[in-house]
Amino acid sequence: MDVRAAIAFEAGKPLVVDTVQLEGPRNAEVLVEIKATGLCHTDKYTLSGQDPEGLFPAILGHEGAGIVREVGPDVRHLKPGDHVIPLYTPECRECKSCLSQKTNLCTSIRSTQGKGLMPDGTSRFSYKGKPVLHYMGCSTFANYTVLPEIALAKIRDDAPFDKVCYIGCGVTTGLGAVLFTAKVEPNSTVVVFGLGGIGLNVIQGAKLVGARQIIGVDINPAREAMARQFGMTDFVNPKDLGPDGDVVGHLVELTGGGADYTFECVGNTTLMRQALECAHRGWGVSCVIGVAGAGQEISTRPFQLVTGRRWIGSAFGGARGRTDVPKIVDWYMDNRIDIDSLITHKLPLERINEGFDLMTRGESIRTVVEY
Ligand code: NAD
Ligand code: 022
Ligand code: ZN
Image (cartoon, rainbow, N blue to C red; front, side, top):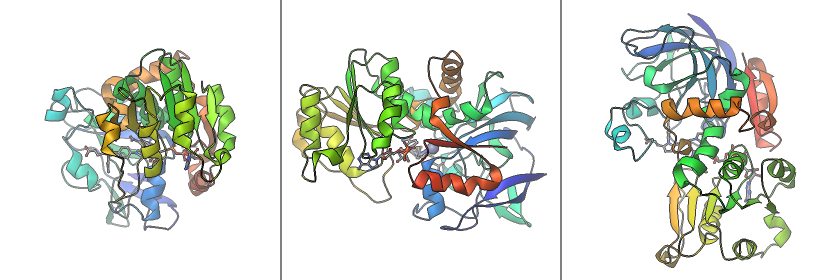
């Protein structure tokens, strides 16, 4: 069938909006009509050409929501008409990782997903007869896409697509890191580095679990107001501390000895170290969420760990997509979490490249494309 898509033909070039061909679903696959998609950092990172694992031509996008239109043979849990959110971290419930109950990183389709292919090793997309690759198993920058059944969370059908698409990555990543990965307790002190699309969701997660103090750190002063609206109690702009400012010392003092939990939501290895070192001696936990550039390394003195700080990381908020994503949609529908304020821009598909410019300039939290 003909579908409308933003195609990434080559690294460093803008997306091209055109018609591509999509084949129907094969075994255990589902055809989804995408109604809305968010623009997220990895899409931009891959398009820039800096991602050594980025492959072209491809249909990018991994933060969507839509409706099942057709199911292939052996699809057991979904039917046409079901509302769904695509999962770049699938949940097969059968692989060693899923059965371990210790991780959300399902391994059942990992190798083909990383190559931009469906589990049978082929692509459903093509342009002028030549294959176009999938991306993170989702390819939500198209108004129709095909996904494995295990990479779809079924959600309630009264949830607005233009808001809950953000649960497909940013909301779940931030909230989940607090609730599922770090398991922050009530009355905790929390430091959040980076108050963007992820950090603001960490803040709302920390507030949800009853953290006593939530300190936000950002070099963009425009982020303070929104962060306070989401529950931040103190704001630190490292630039205000001067060129030789001691950010760690300042945060340790503000928290009365170090934070119970810290989160790095930028992807900057210097901040990752600061986040670890401002965690409390003896029990502080520091969680890396930001994705650093390929080949980068983190460092600290082993003393920091020997004295009881723990350095952990979180992918997709530690969420098991098919199980946890529908619950997060319910929290939104019950007004327990705010998504609307974070969707600062909306664009039609034809103007998708403007969304990446907004991201680069730090003007948007989330831009959503509605089909
Ligand atoms: P964003 O651009 O919306 O936010 C980043 C924020 O960091 C901005 O407010 C910016 O001003 C601030 N910042 C930049 N440099 C800083 C510095 N030196 N000190 C303090 N603040 C600084 O980005 P986002 O959408 O929130 O994503 C953040 C990171 O999370 C990215 O690396 C992204 O790839 C990653 N991410 C990880 C996962 C995961 O599963 N682990 C999922 C989604 C996103
Ligand atoms: C989403 N991310 C950043 C912004 N939006 C993001 C990027 C990478 C990961 C998670 C979120 C991630 C962490 C660990 C892994 N990935 C590896 C998972 C594994 O090996 O099982 C990751 C994921 C998907 C892909 C690549 C890396 C992919 O589909 N290409 C989850
Ligand atoms: Zn993302």
